[in-house]
Length: 263
Length: 247
Image 1 (tube, chains in turn purple, orange):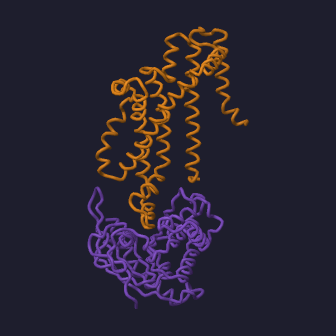
Image 2 (tube, chains in turn yellow, cyan):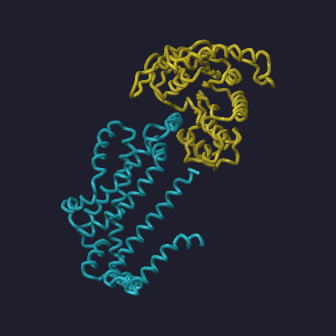
Image 3 (cartoon, helix red, strand yellow):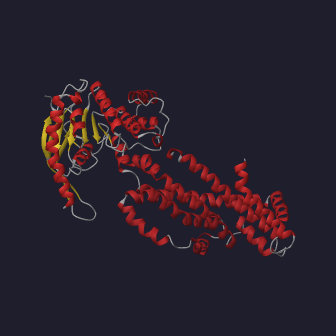
């Protein structure tokens, strides 16, 4: 077991809406993530899993507790932590190529090198031929491929994924899951993957972190290492049992979350 | 071609009606010279150089005023959207100044800067700034947070993000604001030149009007209309180009 790359230590987070009461989104969360580990954050909506991701990304200020990445406290966003959002967050005024180039330009990569690298990642996600298309002309799946290429291209050590396949239809979603896994196996990065889909979490991740309903804290951490290369893993007995086990944990929280919303 | 013909057919009909009404003196020739007389007057003005020099003066005033309004108004709007301090400082001023008829400022700008270019430029700048500011403000405020975060995570600094993400996000509304400003600039330009100027197209209109040279007056009015039309059409083209990504 390698040393932790990301240390999350007693992190709490409060949202203070302009009107209304403040909401405790995260309550003393502690978690270590190793280098090149694929971790899923799983929980009902509103459990603070995305908040935790945004804190690691440096998009929200860490006000209580601390988050270390490679030993240094997170202060702001940076290219060591790439992010992929549910709704793609592509720059709509840039073509696929322009989007992928953006991070490389910011990194100051020489022109020829960045053209080559952009093409390499556009090819990797299967968008060859769409380099000059604007996002508005792409399907949801293609948009997310472009967003993935954009983030992978500038080679962040850590990949933060915020329900990246949540807005896709189910066929595209399972296709993308398989491709993400292949890409990750090809060049492992640390991945923190937020989802509320149990099967997706078990299929992709090596560890699934189950979070409770609001205020979010960690309810269980479950090892989900399988031989992911195996065909028909989704139908294997051990996989189904694992999904079942985690589903029971999540169900209670989903019900609690719903009750919370009704009250 | 056929489409263009249909599109401009009403204009042709209007021109024919004008000619007919004036030629058969359905209204007094004094009130409405024939279109052909107006055309002759227009060519005379063109040949004498009067039209071009005065048009150049007007275009210069309008362009400089607009440019200032677009740059400063756009900056103000974008920073109002992203800085609480700037918003607190400028927000009430924008609200207070918005409903003021900018034509009321003509005597003030003349009092400050005299009858020359300065007062016209200042007036157009003041009058055209707010639509641009409001467009930029609303556009910038609608910037998607995820886009800002994406850019930041790719290594863009805070100021860089304004230029790379906020400005393009604001562009559709900003350009609409500028289009309004262009139309407004013509109003203010002609009005201020009519009232207090010794050159420019507005000045010519007033001069010919008071001197009873009605065909020349109409010719100059039509020139202003044509300039406005060309300005708006060209800007629409620019908009369509700049927003091609909207698909």
